[in-house]
Image (cartoon, rainbow, N blue to C red; front, side, top):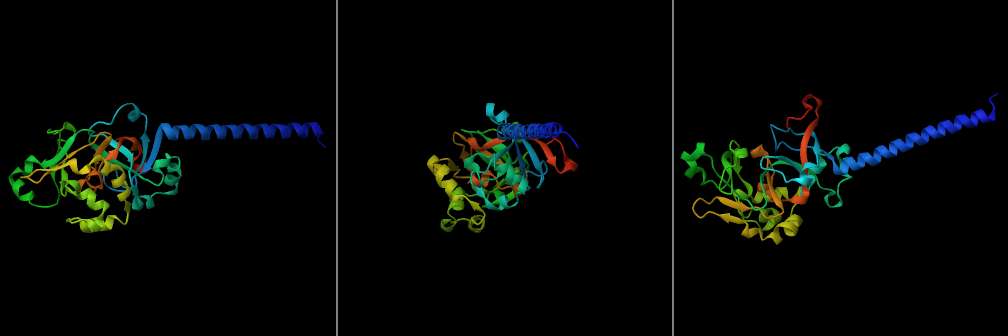
Length: 284
């Protein structure tokens, strides 16, 4: 039979080890939460708006430090909180994504993340013009109220920025209908070729509150100008906001459709694809 003192020593040793393990797990949780809040973020990409760079279902590791000290530049791929609730995208999130998003700031609870390319900064005037290779048919295609073919290039403050020289976009959303944002907010009042689009999307996104809270106070109608001859739309980006578009221009729900993204919604830049393993790595 073991002496009582020896049993007490063993019990004390076990208790001490459990205590040390408990402290280690607590420290790991604390530091992990700090890193998650201030250094890194994760996201699952729900759509194909950035094909071929990023595929639907890709899971990304997002670095959050850089944009705390400098603003994103033209052509940067940026992850941001969507400024309204996208119910369809939220349904695509897995339990892991929902758990990680539970650490998000209170104002973004229930929101999802989008990843797009930055094309417009505060103060910029942006517009789409017919790309040079389509110049011979410019008069014809400009007669279309909407043109989903990628036949336009982006002009920023009257110039084609190097980052977008080879990019081609569809003339859709606000670039096709200067009242698009209003119609998306009030589908029942819209008189537009997009009226069916508005009614359908109103089932999946809660846009009106964002429009009334963020866009109306900006004097949105004064930021949108239509050229009298070409009917092309130019858009001024207000201070404190950015404009994003997806690379897969024919299948991207981006700022052409929902408008400006507040600066505080920007999270960071994707630095690593962590899933699927077959395409693990940077190279975004």
